[in-house]
Image 1 (cartoon, one colour):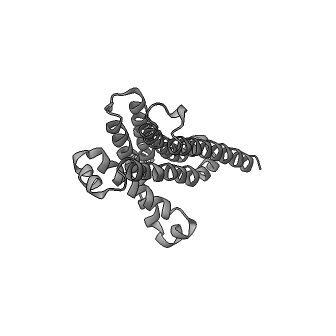
Image 2 (cartoon, rainbow, N blue to C red; image 1 turned 135 degrees about the vertical axis):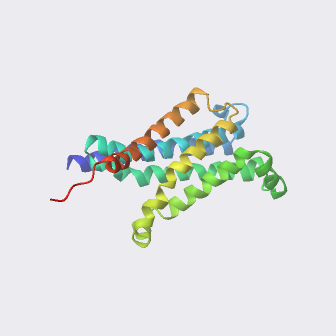
Image 3 (tube, rainbow, N blue to C red; image 1 turned 60 degrees about the vertical axis):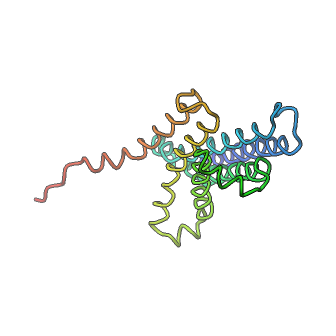
Length: 208
């Protein structure tokens, strides 16, 4: 019962945080709100990307956290935060295509090659799209063991997302904020791999 309450409270916090920030940013970009600064479009793009990366990082936190605490209920937050990451990535892409490039593919296609971080962002989005579409229990049953393999691409999306964000912000990987994301995600990846390393390092059981 206590675990169920914690799940409800945690999901409510995620919903509240995600919805309020998404509404604030979309409203700010559309209405050119003062709180978005002198360049609402650019700030909106940056913050939508930041929140997508934030929720993607949270999605990677839940499995190690459940292992360390012995509380399996943390894993029940994975799908929600993963979908929120996608929910921020969609308008991030839309703002770029529609508002920034005015839906002009003669600008967009060359931009993919001229500014490589745009291509990184597109690849990241396609991974998130695949993960979002297959996040249901029905797809989990259909794909079987392949579902887990597919959803390990979350780590790839996170690393690509960091690179995309760093180069879009023109701060490089040494920027404190970018470095924080990189350190956390690298740590989570190593934590995820550690049980496999430990299992492989165990000596074989001798037969009597």
